[in-house]
Image (cartoon, rainbow, N blue to C red; front, side, top):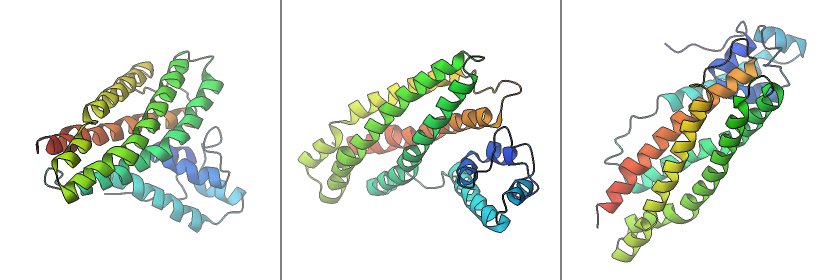
Length: 236
C-alpha cells in the first residue's frame, strides 16, 4: 500500500525515501541536510509557508518516482520501434538530462565537504563526471542521428534506410558497455553504495540517487541492446 507524505514526517526521511524531493526543499530553502532531523510541518511553519502547497508538490514528486519504479508493463517485444524510441527518449533520456546536472552538484558537494575524511569520494567525483560527459554526448547522438533514422526506416522502409538505422548500432553498444564499466566503478568506489555511519542527509541522498541512476541505466540499455537494436537488425 502506498503511503502519503505527511507533515509529521522528518524532512531528511522524505529526501532519503524520495530523493527528488530535494528540488521542492531547495525551492523553499528548507534545509534537508544538517537541519533535516525535524518534522516537515515545523520547517514549514518556521518559514511561514503554505503546508498544503508544499505537500501537494511533494506528492507529485513521489508519484513520478513511484511510477518510475513500477515501470515495465508494456510488451516491448511487440511494440513499434517508434513507441520504444519515444519511451526511451521521454523516460530514460529525460531522466538523465535532469538527473545528471543535479547529481553533479551533489557529488561535488559531498566531495568538497567530506572528501578529507572519505578518500573514495575523489574517485566517485572523477568517475561520475566521466560518465556524465559520455552520456550527454551519447544521448545527443541517439536523439539527433540514430533514432530519427530508425523511425524513418519503420515508416518508409527500404534497404538504404535500414542501413542508415543500423550502421551505428555497434558503436552505440560499445558506448553502453563503457557506461556500464563506469557504473561498476562507481559501485566499487562506494562499497555498493554503503553510506558511512553518521553521514549527513545530503551524503545519504546522493548515494541513493547514484544507485537509482544505475538502476535506470540498466532498464534503459536493456530496452536498446536487447530489444530495439536486435529487432531492427534482424530485418536484414
